[in-house]
Length: 223
Image 1 (spheres, rainbow, N blue to C red):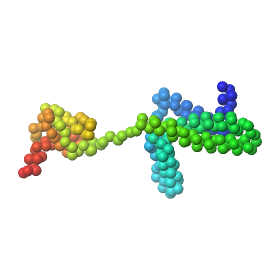
Image 2: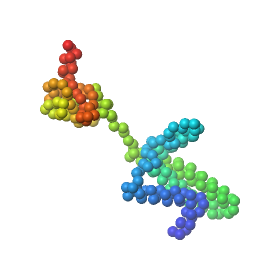
Image 3: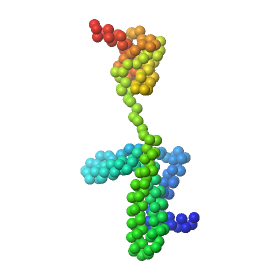
Image 4: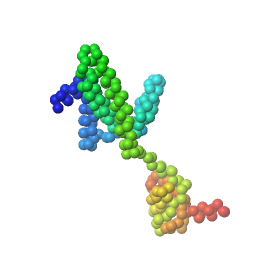
């Protein structure tokens, strides 16, 4: 164990040891509920985004880095998971590389080899991490829920005996999903269980959809 600790504190492994140490502390806080999993950005989040303003080239660099990471699949999971995976893999490669290669040399050659091992470890860590995190991507895939206005213009089936200004419930079939909604009707109607109604708006005050009786709308059009 002492040899492992000593090796992890040698250049360049010590740089990655610091990152891995920070990652361990971070994940301990996540387990305790003190920090969020996506503190650095969720899956498919922005990388170096924002308004570049006068910077210009910096924005292009950020977009290029984001595209590169997305192509590797790194951005398909939260950045905290990706960075931790990269750091751990690079740490192992650096540790082994220094032990089996750089320790056989001294002086300037050793420093050059250690620096080369560090670069190789980072590149290999990035590539191997992309293979490790890709199977995890479905666990972090999110879908945007439709807005309330999305259902305006849809027809719903009434589930209550009556529908008035203060009471009513219906359901909308959206693809294979059934959405139960609160509905209100400000006009006189004969809506009852099983009847069809047209959703015409959403009332934020009453937190309910406004509906009109379907057959009354047809009658109005005929007149």
